[in-house]
Length: 547
Image (cartoon, rainbow, N blue to C red; front, side, top):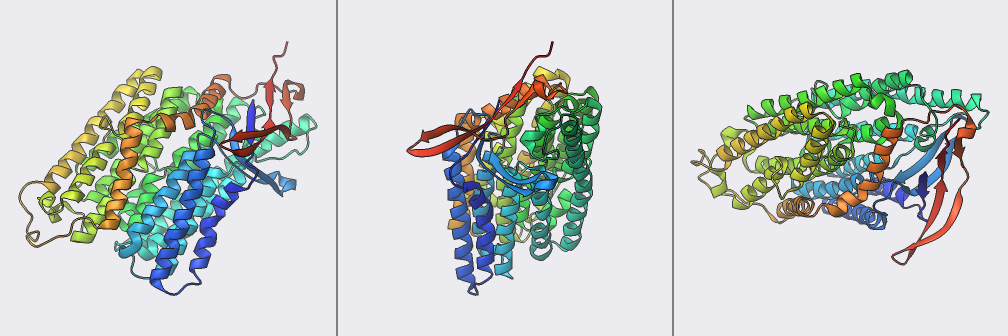
């Protein structure tokens, strides 16, 4: 049974459009200090809204919560349908959290076209949140594409590298190429629904709604075709080896803010767990599909880690480290069991604190030495002990030290992988070893040993804003590492529902009598939580055995 819980107030619409409205207001201001303060206020209020959503979210539930739905283009079955469940809700909080930190980081590091920069950053936040709250696939696709506009200008105008224009164009072209295939896969899902609805005289006969698409059967061979089409759209954005070539360019040439978003918010792999696995369960479990996805995941783990090991530049090391971590996520997803899916989802959230945190620290190093190349460092811990301490903490989380968030996610992934395919799990373990090697080797050379020439003069340690950024990330790292239960409870219900869906497969019936669809809202009365009323709206799908 699928449930949708409404909130009685369009909080997701507010969460979605508030940053965009705030960015437009920034364009009316002229004073740089006022613009910065206004941007921080908008990002901070957005974070407050996200926290309210997290606090009101019902854990251990598979329900789609805070649901809002309005017909958008009825003849085509396209609707403005927003909702959150345990798979998506943490990403909204992560996006709002990182945006606040990016605003703080950009306070002194962005010195030209400040108004446009912060407006573009807030517009980008709206599009990212739109991806996470969209339940209609066309609405999801619209935000997926709109994301490219602010991203392109952020990379091109505020990137620090000489090849930033090339990196921005490469990012847009790669994503657009994949999006063409993904849109075709989405259309095929709609046409499959139309074919079924016409055969059973059901109106409306078109829909792009995720919950409606779950209710009807898709032939396994058609599922495989649609899976690979959507795969091409998601894999470029992820990006998974060997579709990753744009990522190092963007993470090195673009601004730190964009690096934090691209390395810390895993949109591509979110698409797999949100849409591909539940809508295409037979294809997701197809032997050939699993073998390809697992192999790509393992190649990403090993390739990314080995290339990171030989990098003398810290930002380039982090770029390939991100590819390696993404390989772990894919291995966990296609273990297709509870532990693997849970570990992958938690790891996607964890990377928003560890990998994104390392990019912040790379930015701190750059502002002091105008480089992140190893030749510019050596004995740095003697000059900036606070920076060195936070770099060690966040770096150890990245390599999965017990007690940090990275350990919990990687442990669950490996547990799931060993349970499903022990050989894949055994190969994946090598990534943990390589990960420790590339980070600790770089850290030892950069932070200890004799002082590099030019470091004899005074070099400032972290200032107040930088300390807030590093400390906030460290708190989240230890919270999840030492007490992950609240985060796991949020996602458990949805992950278990996904596992059940994979076990059951798509609805194997071709008669409407076998599928009890109740499209009209059935009010179950107001539910009181914390002194507030949440109105429950139920959409049921009952599966009846046929004789």
